[in-house]
Length: 183
Image 1: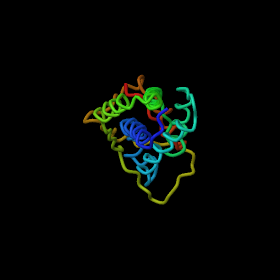
Image 2 (image 1 turned 180 degrees about the vertical axis):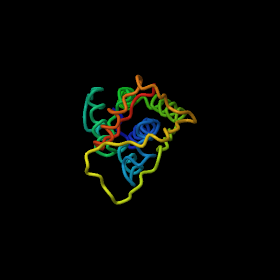
Image 3 (image 1 turned 90 degrees about the horizontal axis):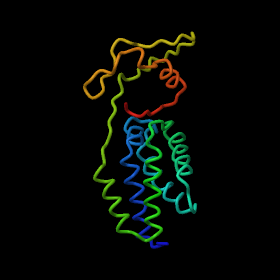
Image 4 (image 1 turned 30 degrees about the horizontal axis):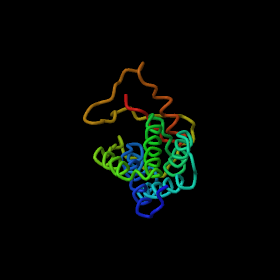
C-alpha cells in the first residue's frame, strides 16, 4: 500500500476533483444550502471523505454512498435523489484502489479526467424570499403562480399530467431540498 504523504495528498486531490465536479454538491454550495460556510463545508467534506477511506478497509460502494448521503443531508440539508451518488462513489472507490495499489500515474490520469470535465452548475432561484416578519398559521398552503421560473432561458413544461407540484411543495415545506435527475 502506498503510504507516503505525497501519494496521500494525490488521493486527496482525487477526492477533491470528484466532489468539485459533482453538480449536486456545486448546486448546494452555490445556492447556500449549507449556509454561509457552504464552500468551507464542501472543502471539509474532501478531508472527511479521504480520511473515511483511510480509516476503513475494503469499503463497499453502498457504504460510501450512505456516508456521502449522510454528509449531504447533515451539512447541506440535501437529499441526493438524482442517481449521481452511485457514480460518485464508484469514482472514489476506483481512485482509492489505484492509490492502494501504488498506481499513481493512473490516479493522476483519473484526476486530470475529472478536472477537465469540470462543469459548474448554476441555478438561480425563481424569486427571492421576502422576510416580512409575518408568519401565517392559518394552515392554508398557497403558492404564487404568477410567473413560472425560467431555467436556461426556457419555461418549464406546464402540462399538469407531467408534473406533481403538490409533492414538490410538500418536500419544500418540510425543509428538505431534493435534487432530482434532469429529464
